[in-house]
Length: 278
Image (cartoon, rainbow, N blue to C red; front, top):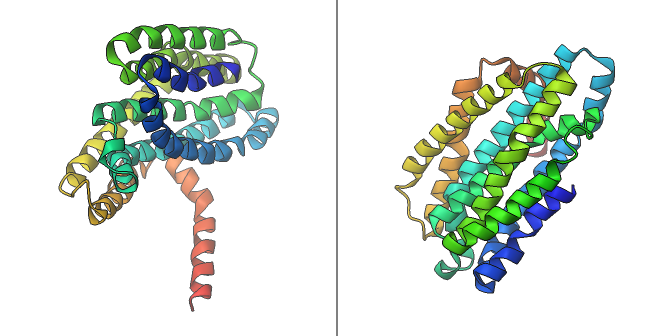
């Protein structure tokens, strides 16, 4: 927890020191939106912890591993879809909200979104680590994570400004959390190799990037600076990535399991709506 606070909490300080207070103000608008999403998604994943802890105590490791794959897939869908939406809609929304003077360049928005995606894809691993009590094995990770983040961010800030600070955060994640957390979970929680996790991570990320490129190409025909253009892009973002994800993953065991669980809830919601407007 301390490592996470240091990594995420020092960005504004470093930006104000090396770039300027104006950039902190610009970033706060983006941070407001992204923090809101992280809070909502964090609560959702945190709600799984007790059930996963019970699962770990009563079920086999094979069953635990399958449930992990399902939650990891759910995390990919949520954060992959959200990343595509943020990449396309963030600047358009802020332009409508505050104006062109408050926009970051798209290259910087991409770096912010990559950071959001990498952080989000850790949720499933962290949820299982917390539920299974695997805290001791990576106890030094926060120290390395915070140190790498501070050193790299300070160095890169000299050359790339705000982008360098966020790249430093990405590098600290990739060199520590990205591989240490799943390694600990798979070795001490599931007692098997972590290679399959990284293979699936790469596959998921490839599909997300492909869906993102297609969505960007389709949404690029609409204007960035009008309300109608924003609404059109929003509809494209809501439709294209989800359809592509459904086409690719509809036959997987993870999708079938999650669909089986959520189907009664969906029917119940439609029934309530039908009764309400009858």
